[in-house]
Length: 299
View 1 (cartoon, one colour):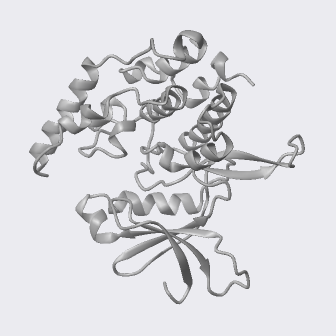
View 2 (cartoon, rainbow, N blue to C red):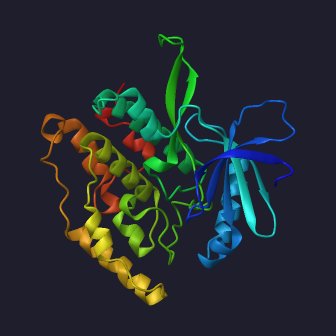
View 3 (cartoon, helix red, strand yellow):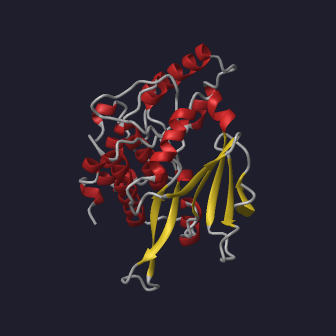
């Protein structure tokens, strides 16, 4: 890999998601570092019993029909120990860094939230229509990309893009859903049923609802302590299964706060968010396409 790429900035050190660097091809005449490379350990993926799905997801993303809300992969390389996933560097930065740059006082206009959620649902709808689930939708997996906009004073505008399909289900079908023994994604953004190994279009929509709640309220719909309280002491299948059952039951008993600001002043947005965050998957919108028809999302 060192014969092909060089890098000068590390965005993320080794961890569950692998190492992430800003890089450039050595054979390119350009001096700028315009790509991001994720380096994933094969051994780590094997320990998680996830290498087969991971590999298939990357192949699918290399051939994915283009969409303005989904970051395409440039190439995926491998050697004996690692996978190297290369994509464009988002020139608008990460979601939160972009928002902090644009709204330095921390006051996020609801019209901006509306646009972000609409764009995110359009991207999720595209992914689902290709027969895939993302299974790890969260702010860390959203970036902002500039595009030409003749109506903008600068001639440019930013659009949200979905990245990181490491946890994706490449063979999802609404006709024959599968129940797995693993819990994918990031627990604070996961739907309740995912702790029972059940994933669907509705579980991705729940994650979108969590992001909507966070952007509107500045806090998560569930307290972090809920997940920390049930941390398991060992990693045996029995211990992990018990922990997942306990988190599911606790989420079932927990009541989401719909009385805090700004919900009393934003009943239409609250209606959408509550639908996305319904405890039962069957009570959420039937699809991302259906969620996009909600009145609050009208331009």
